[in-house]
Image (tube, rainbow, N blue to C red; front, side):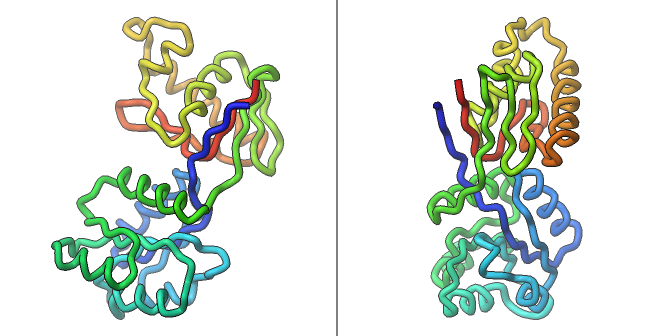
Length: 233
């Protein structure tokens, strides 16, 4: 069995007071397969944070009722085994040094691409040994085994697409590579056909298993399978 893991944690808590960005972060993390808890203030964070559930945290610094830095120091004094990423508009060298000194594992400015945040969380989850259940693609049986849910029979075309994506979990796979996996000429291939196929595959997986397919559409470039994955002959 070929096996590759894309380490991640199922539960992440986000502390961000700006409503639009908070919603965007929550939706982005959900698309990546995380169960995201969002808080708008230090007080709400304390109310919603569960050390038994949350393995990762994304924390802003300037908040309406306190400092994110003080909160991080508080969490570290409590010996919380928590991966912490600061995501803040305050991004000078001094800010970053202070954040890391007080206990943050990583410090990102809000100008960073969200894919960088995703990669940072994945690397942190990998280092902390936080992993999610594995999706298994059975090639011979043409079947997708969904963690803790019914398996999904696949058409030959869907099997080829998932094989291409799940052989490289966590990586971006371009339209050209997927077209080649399908055995078609990329220059002659209408990308809208692939988008339609992916839409139908997502719908089928969710209808049968009750779980969303962990595939993220990358704007104008391709797709990414963002959960741990394994291929079985």
